[in-house]
Length: 104
Image 1 (spheres, rainbow, N blue to C red):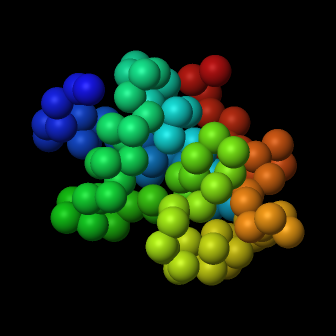
Image 2: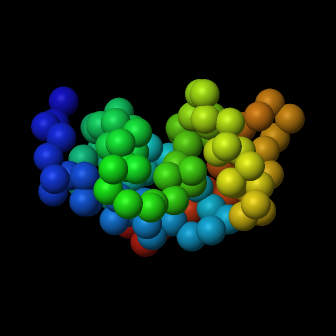
């Protein structure tokens, strides 16, 4: 696993900052966009500590299947406030809400 350094943290958080309201991105998508496609868990680790670096829309990042962060009840509310509605199974519809980044 890659080392967690300030440059990596900045790359991840800068990418997350680009996700528009009403859209979500997956951990793997963020990893791919910063050139570390095999480091989606590292992205999650950075996001779990993002509060120490300022305000970022981390609630817009979900897993590849649209699952929200376990134990973070506020995430669903923050997404709903932006118009991202959850499916009956509690997941985000990735086909409908996934951010179409320019890194494709």
